[in-house]
Image (spheres, helix red, strand yellow):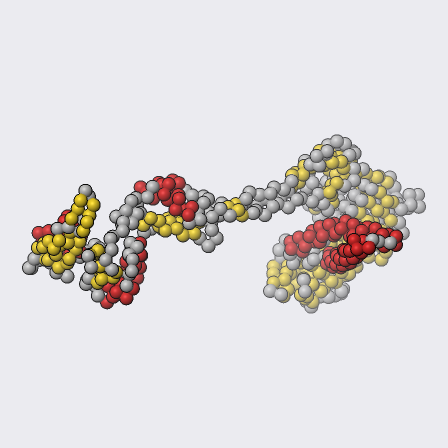
Length: 592
C-alpha cells in the first residue's frame, strides 16, 4: 500500500494515523490536505482529512495496527492490514469485537466481511456516515459453571473515559457478581492495564460440612485381653487386663454434639447449605448416670466399666469360691462373674458383663455380654455351649459350640463348632484345629489344621451370617410397621372426614382412639429399628474378606471357604496363607 486517506480531529491526529497505517515516518511521505477541518472551542465540526503518499523509492514498514476505521463525510470506512502470514482466528475475532464495541450504526455485514477477508489493504465502506462514538474502558465478565469463580477481561478505551475502582465493582454487580470480590485485584488490574487477559476477580466460599458428634472417653477402654504366650509355648490366661475399675460419681465420657457446618456462598450470592454432622450414638447402660445437661455420663456405682455395643455399663462382680453345681444352682448376674472352680454339666451361667472360669467348663452353657475366659479349657462332651458378646479365651476347646462376637483364642480346638465375629487364633505348643467347623469374620490362624487321617474340617472366613439374618429380620419388621402405619393413617383420615360430616358414634370414637394408639406405637418403634439397620450397614461396609494362615501344616480333608469361593485341600501344605483374590481362593507363603 503506497497511499492512504485518513481523517482525524486535528492535522496531527490524522497524520499519525496515516504514518502508522503505512508503517513509515514523516520524512518518507508527501502529505496533501484534502480538508483542513473545523473546530470551534474544541468542538470538532468536521474532521481534518489528509491524503498521504509514500515518496518515490521510499518503502513502508509493517504497521502495528491490524486495521483502521475512518469516519468520513460519506460513511464509515474500514481497511484491514494483515501481516504477510495472514490473519489468525484470534485476530479476526479481535477486529470484529473492536468494531462491535464502537457501536457503529447500520453496519453492512457483507461489506464488513469483504474488508476483513477478501479486500485486505483496501478501504471498504461498512456503514453510513455518522459521528464516531467515544467508548469508555470496559470489562467483560465470565462466571464459571459452578458459580464459584468470576473472571474479568479488561477492554481498552476507544476515545472514552478510563474505569475507576467503583466502576468495576458496579459493572461486576450488574453482571451478577456480588460476593467474594477481590478489591486488591481490582487495584492491580487498574494499575497494570493488562488488556485482553482474563483474570480471576472473585471467588465464592464453599460450604464447610458440619463435624459429627463424638464421645470423649475419660477412662481407658483399650483392654484387648490378649493372652501372653510364654517362651516355653504355653499361654498365660491370668493377666488379660479386660476391665477398668471406676468409683461412684467418676466422669466416664463427655458427649460432644455435632455441628451444623458453615454456609457457603457463590459469587452470585447464592447460599450453599453444608451437610450437618451426625449425632453420636452412645447409650447409658447399667449403673451409669447422665448429667443434667445431658452431656456427660457418670458412674452410678463402684465397679468395672465396660463399653458393650454403644452403651457404657458399670458392673459389680460376683465371685463363686468353688464349682457351679447343686450348691449354687444356675447363675444369672447383672455384672461380671468369677468362678474359682469348675462349671459342671447341665448348669448355666449368664452374665451381662464378663465370665472368668479358673477351672474346667464341662457340658454347660455360658452366656455373657462381654468376654468369656476359661483357664483350664472346655470339655463340652457334645453339650457345652459358649456364647459371648466379646472374646472367648480358653486353653482348649473340645466337643463344644462357641458363638463369639469377638476373637476366639485357644491352644487347641477339636471337633467343635466355632463362630467368631473377629479372628480365631490358635496358638501355643499345639496350635491345633481338627474336626468340626470354624467360622470367623476377620481370619483364622493356627499352627496345624486337620490331621494325617484326613479328618473333615471346615474353615470359613467372612461376614458373620447371623448379622445378615438379623438385618433381614429388621428389614421385614420395618416394612410391616410402615404398612401398619399407612393403614392407620388411612383409617384416621376416613374417621375424621366422617366426624366433620355427621359426627362419630360411640363405637367409631373408640375405634379412632384405638387407631391413634396403633399409630403412636408404630412411630415409637421405627427409630431403634432404623438405627440398628444403619449400624449393621456400617459393619457390612467395613468387613473385609479375611484370610486363613497356617504356621506349620494343613492336611487333606480340610475345606476352606472365603466369601462365595471354596477350596478342598487334597495334599499336605506347609507355611501357607489362603485369601480370596479375583473371585478365587489363592495361597501364598505364610502371612501373620
